[in-house]
Length: 294
Image 1 (cartoon, rainbow, N blue to C red):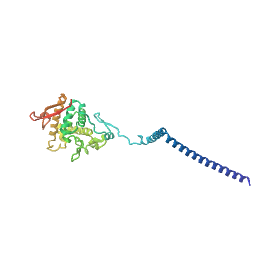
Image 2 (image 1 turned 60 degrees about the horizontal axis):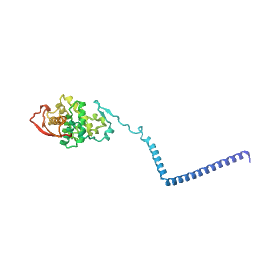
Image 3 (image 1 turned 120 degrees about the vertical axis):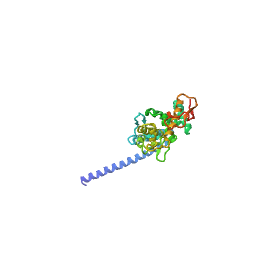
């Protein structure tokens, strides 16, 4: 046998020994692993405290693995909040969707606002708490827009009767019956046209539309005709008169509330106002019960 053959046979023997040893190590390793698993299972079954601790650690590990999947980098970016020209904070669409219509106990409002809220609640048969929110919002918007808040509430009363989901056959929607398709740009800050059914958003948009109408017409009564879409026709169907009459009633209610009236008071309020309230006749009046909380 030559030397080269001896070398090859020696190499084969070494390789065979290495492979056999490796297989033995793997086999023994798996055997030890199996024994360790069996021992661990028996230990966990006999020790409830160790089992509970292991479960907690496993849950923590799974939660830590889940965190990257729900990190801000992979989630849909939130639409940032915007601020209106009057400084009013406008929340984003996600917040609008999550927010239920808020309610305020009228007893927490100033007496003037509380009197208006209770009166509207009784007349239009709606809960006083949501109306309290709308009254507070109307007074806040009135200050920033230089409009009488009772005028804003009078328009809501005539347009929708305080039904935030009202819709006319021509597509006017919400509390102030804004034509959503025409003024969709005004809802962009609130997440789109569906915000028309959010009472506070609809109130803000309606006031903006009213301001534009009054500015275009040059007068309150003319602005109301524009608002109802009767700017170019002879008859507005009595719309302006109805709004101004309700405005006069609400002004009287607010005046009583501001004067810290008792729980129930009766005031003389114009029953109909064909012109601005100042021109109403004292003889055309009716008794209106104002309900307020002391």
